[in-house]
Image 1: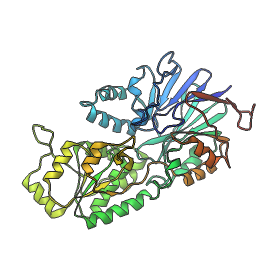
Image 2: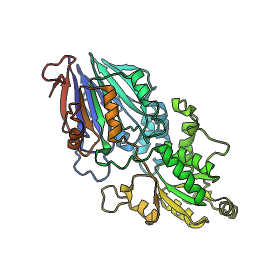
Image 3: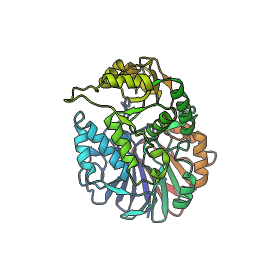
Image 4: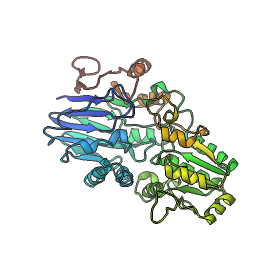
Length: 429
């Protein structure tokens, strides 16, 4: 019997990846997300067993809650079973509840999530002939997962998005040895193949840099993704170390509360716990008029103590910054492609909020190539299939000295057996 792997989307683009593992008519899909802005070449997917047809032997696994991995699940038939991490589901619920009044798809997302099934890190579960082992990984999304997928003696490891320079990377190889061991094939993200400098700092080093900045600058405004949990908590603790009050809006505070109150294996770490002073949620006008409430006493307090404020690029925050005191140091703590005019991902609102005057303090949520080689050497796969990359050719060139790299195109399949029949990989295209 064969395990057939099909990359329906993601062989030559970052984000929006859809991967299928098939065996004896059973189909296990991984991720069904939105395509990143500016990718005009992407076609609408019509996949038997996922978007239409007989779904009685199909299921979908979600690696994490970023929109390019989960964002299109509302377009799928309601009968399709969907699995994701428990805390990731709760974070997505907060996000969808926040956005449902402005983005109608999130109304359906919030309803759909009520029926999503959850799994736990390191706990095997089965679907049809597949044995699935979820492994928690370090990414800029909290509660992100990779999957070991095995059937009929053939094993594959689907990496999802991950890195080895974050706060939660220290025990990653130990977890791989304990729960995964060696595998036959790796379906691997390769986001940073053309970005060798974006992982130059560890998250812990970046946190120390923020502590120094917050001590030097009395009033700091940081723009970052509200679901970048590690960075959000890192900045919170950095602000307290620098003696600065830490402000977020109600939505960001709810996301932090989900993590603090969760049963995740990671919340034993002090990083994901509140200290004596919790993050301060900004107050809204009542009745709501799309503005934060700024009293004289609040302005006096900020003028005396300084602050670290986590901002987003919208009118509400722009108005707030005009009212509160202090010579504000603005910081961009997300990928700078969003503010480079002429790029596909350019965000005009974010660029306007920063007004061209900011420090850039960031490190990637994705693995660098040196760490990726170490990762492959531990798993010792028979072959690697790159996805989530805009340069699969460069990936193959970099790693084919040690491992066969199978370069597929969108929609193309490859089948594997436990016994080599056609080549050294045991693969049939």
